[in-house]
Length: 113
Length: 114
Picture 1: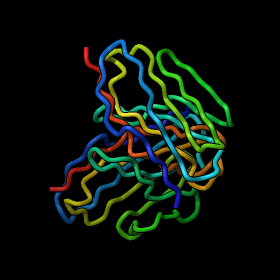
Picture 2 (picture 1 turned 120 degrees about the vertical axis):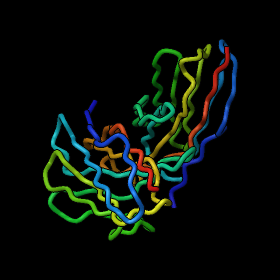
Picture 3 (picture 1 turned 60 degrees about the horizontal axis):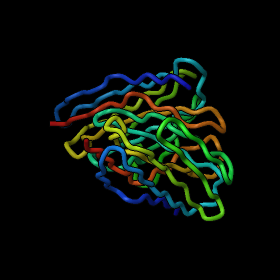
């Protein structure tokens, strides 16, 4: 059974600080996806990581993928309140690029002034 | 990215009634769509894969007779929750994706069964 584990599940941090969210998965997939969900809303795509060593950055967020370690990280730099949300990583269920996704449990991030 | 429109955004229904949720792919023809369910403060779980012109594929533990899926065209999939009960109350989200790209999600439908 494919497992996707995120940690931490809950994170409260102050503005201006840096932190990293970790995502471990049990499949040999070389793709991983990060999504953001605001309360009561659907999912917004943040990053698509398609190969080992992939690194992508958008604003204060940077995601990386190590397929050998089956680990992805989402790093937050100098956090601001607007980044408060729940962040999910996800992996293709069957290893292909056209299947449903298996999600981690999500990291609920609160950024306080 | 792909644009996915889901309707309604929220619905309240009585126990025992049926509710239909629509999911439209607005900017490409989707032979496959996905239906997820999310309980409060939990993650998304894939319920079923909707296939245009053929039967849906259901994940283990999902009752196909309770959650009817129809994918009659390349832009529309529907999920009907039949004989709804309070435990079916959840956030239902549809998704499409083109091969080897990320999935894009509809706005979600919050179903409350009273």
